[in-house]
Structures are given as C-alpha cells and as structure tokens.
Image (cartoon, rainbow, N blue to C red; front, top):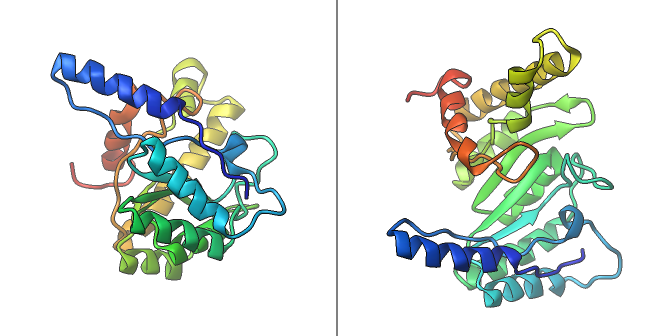
Length: 231
C-alpha cells in the first residue's frame, strides 16, 4: 500500500484549538493526513510501510489513526467491496498504533474489510456496511465477533445527499426511491448489529457530499426513528 502524510487536517486542528481557546469552546481531535484516493493499493511496498505511516502520523501530531480498509463509494478507481490491505498490513498498523498509545478507526464498506479490521482489533469500524457487489449482506457470525472483541461501530446512518434529495425532489423520482431503498436496508443492517450486541457510536461522515458538521444531530435522530433505539 502507498502511505503518505498530508498535514492540512492537522494544521486546521491547531487553528481550531486556538480559536476554541479564545472562545472558551471545546477543542478538536484529528486523524492526521489521508492517503490519496482512499488509500489505493500500490505494488512493491514492504510490510514495514504501515508501521512507518503510523509513526509519521503520530510525529506530525495525529490524535488517532484512520485507515481505509476498503475503497470508498465516492472515490473513482477504488472498490468499496474489496479489502485494500492484507490482514498482516492491518495488524502491523494497529500494533504500532497501540505501541504509541493511539486508537485506530477503520473505514469499512465491504465484508472483506470487516474481516481484516476485526483481525487487527481496530478501535472503531466506520460504516461497517457488510457490502457485497449485490448489496448489503449481513453476516451474524462476524457481527457477534465484533461485539465480543469490544469494537465499536459507527454506522453513519445520516446521509446528507439523501436528505437533500428528499427536500428538493418529488418522492416518486427514481433517485429518491433508490435512496429510500438503500436507507431501509441500512436501517435493517444496524438493527441486526444492535441485536447481536454490537456497541454503536454516532457519526456524520462530514466532508462527504452534502454531509456537514452541522448535520450531525440527524444521525442521532435517525438512530431513534430509523433504528428504534431509545432517545
């Protein structure tokens, strides 16, 4: 895999801390730089690359690490259903992070990425979509293993683009119909995770199309209205 440190996020975090201190507001934590194009795999790298990447991020000031264990839905040239790193890569990364007392969040859509993230004992799995080429296909055995490992899942059930579609388009348009079908499937997935006693945390996936930091409360609302969690 190709690992690179981009420090724009860390610079923004430092400025945010300065502004927050002046306004007596809470600060922020940052995951450090991301790799280009959702961490696209490249040939010829040695196994020490994940460890070097962790050390570089921490040295640059990262509060925690984030790895794209699968491709992303919005990144051309990546496969959201496939694992981008081997189990050995992922384990090397989390071992180095633990050595430096840092937590690791793993972006995961495809089920192969769920398996590598679970093997590496990441702190949180972001999305955890159990995605296959044909759609979402939950695997209860993996869900129970996530629960037993004490790994948190951030299912990111709010969807800014979908909210915009519901607001701006007739509910019978194909785009809205498709979005509602995907959201229903995602609600069902998260209910299954809850039934298997997986611990959830809330997150908005801010930065993706139409997802803003201000939209975070919608994730909490949908956890109650869509997943049937208690307020």
